[in-house]
Image (cartoon, rainbow, N blue to C red):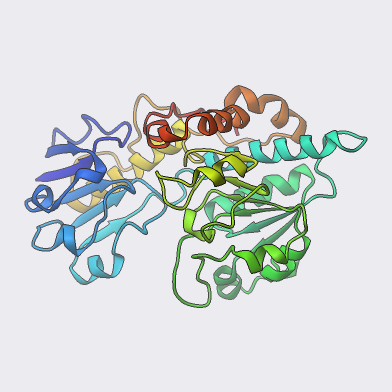
Length: 343
């Protein structure tokens, strides 16, 4: 058995070698010749898994250590008998930590201008996309005192959700929200398409000072609309991002919102478990990297979160570093020291 693996998937080295030949390559360097005699590919977003890569190969399994899968031609894989598994939900608490750091910064900035405590009461948070990440963000934000308005049309239709569950039409959220955070997949077709959903018309309908967070997919934002009301982790044109936009955004990070140690470990665990099940490898069904911390979810109040957050994730410092050295975007992402989750 032969496996081609992205060399930057953490905690993977040595795990599968007892059962297979494992070849580690840079994700963006994996080509047709590399996978022709491979049975499986373990990847991240830098490998385009499509007919150009896979035609004529014996690959029958692809595991991507990411929640997104827009780098994989899913219909082609399905038509050609290739099973694809993702790590959906693996980094939900890592992204929650990123959003929480942003919210702490925004509330602090707001309350510098008015008398009173730095509390979020009265602020409206719109959560667009209420899956693994959005659900967590909505829960914690509501507990902290935000008025949370949620939008997820596919879920609303499938589950019959409505205002009783704080789900609203997107245009109502756009008009009411002080902050909007996006946690959607990238889709280009159909009534629920997310590609380019945030454009000039969208922005014209928001409150004048509403802040928009994007930690989902860069193309959710139409190129060129990003400005001083944006806080961005996922960008159009990565890694060659628009430096003018980077200079204008309130805060910017190099696509590391979900880069927690526990999230990365779980992503690897999920694809390794799926591969082991597919090929009958003798690994425990609950395998998890031995040297990685495990996530320990817990409640945390607003004051404690704001006080402790900089010890775990100083988003202002991360943003300042990226703005000072934007040419290092890819290096910062690839060499990021995975932060510890704390809630």
